[in-house]
Image (cartoon, rainbow, N blue to C red; front, side, top):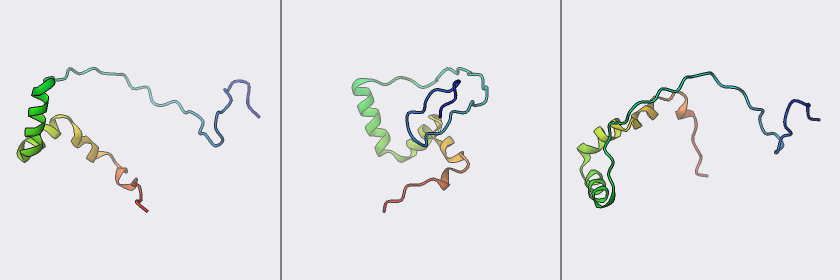
Length: 80
């Protein structure tokens, strides 16, 4: 039975939506240059071959923030 103020669920066992926290959006300007064309190909190849450049670029892209997510190690897909 569906309540009158809710939309009917499309799938069995689909969770009800919950409202998240009200967090204001703060726009920050990117300081990374845009690479296109052959410049992207050459720079990408160089970065893949030169190890000491990879670390600073990884940190500059804020990819290291993925390591700080609490509880992320608990989620994994078994290969069996």
